Image 1 (cartoon, one colour):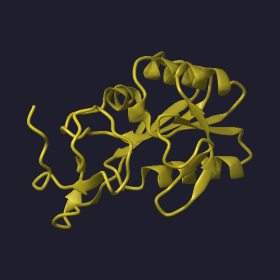
Image 2 (cartoon, rainbow, N blue to C red):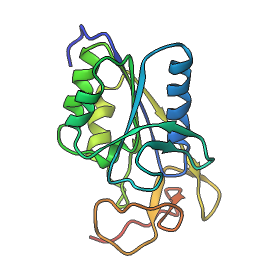
Image 3 (tube, rainbow, N blue to C red):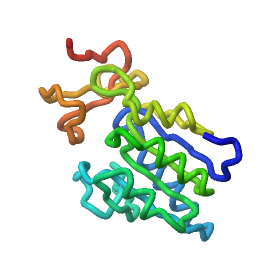
Image 4 (cartoon, one colour):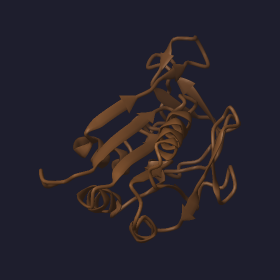
Length: 184
């Protein structure tokens, strides 16, 4: 990224159930209240809260546009001051390029996503943004097994797919000691 950019990136990351979407919605609402032009995006593959909404586990909502391809974000964000992107770990190739383009155009970007996958490795989209973020907010949760600080997300359903859409029926937060990654 060029040093002459005018916008910034804040990455909000952590395991599932850590409050990432809540933090994102709070930042977007504050920007909207400050009369900034704000738009939010989420991956179309995440169907848990409907097409046009970011929804927190506590029921807070914020209008959002579902996108199937990261290039849709750059096109739809034209003319906005602040862009929020939820569930960044769903996005693949080209995600950092879109983020860099927006920041170079002066956009303040808030990106939220799970940092570690069900195997304990970093999601590539989140890892790439992390290396270029101006600010990183790393949230934790409470381990569902022992109550310690949780940084991992344990997948509870049998699947080797990189991403499985689900909530509490499919995932729970775990500390490093209670986390049991699948054998590969």
